[in-house]
Image 1 (tube, helix red, strand yellow):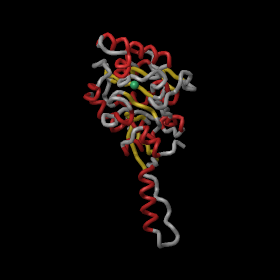
Image 2 (cartoon, rainbow, N blue to C red):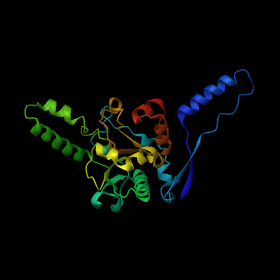
Image 3 (cartoon, rainbow, N blue to C red):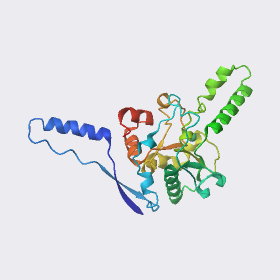
Image 4 (tube, rainbow, N blue to C red):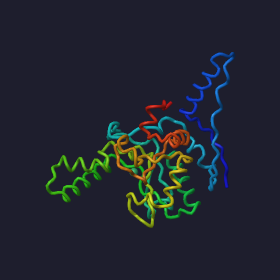
Length: 258
Ligand SMILES: [Zn+2]
């Protein structure tokens, strides 16, 4: 058991506490010191030493937003890319991520395995623009084949509910992963019935990850529920989002990325 203490600044909590303090001390001199930041302690099964710096990054680069309103463009690519250890990926296939996110993802899956969720593997990470283009074209062809009476526009509207237009996929940031069960090799809502899912919902933020497309936030994210898709933002931001229930879009509107 490895106990680590992580200082977490929760913006909403701090703001409310400061406001309350200001009201209480309005008539007294001098004002009280600001409240101490809440401290969160978490027990890790794995030794976090090799991963600590990575998971605790507060670099605003890890808050990069990529969605339908904020496309990355054809040339966007992570500055540094690492391949994940093959034993952590589905069938040992090559999955690459931005290098800091790769360390955090490795820690997350090693922790899952250490806790007995041995069937969980990573099935996708960084995707290039060209890969997205190929995927999008395939989905368009599938919809056209399944609905011969649909126009191109109808097919596109359908595809856009589950796939990003090339240049708008978060996978192009190299900061997100798709997890999968090796006992149920599909990316669909059945992942939410896997016992690992409940653990992820409660604990992924300790590794700097958030569930990116929650079931009740499709109007905000523009995506259907994806219980398998996790985005790296760093422990501090992930913890704030975990506590407030905010999506990345909502968090960025209420918190300065710096
Ligand atoms: Zn994904």
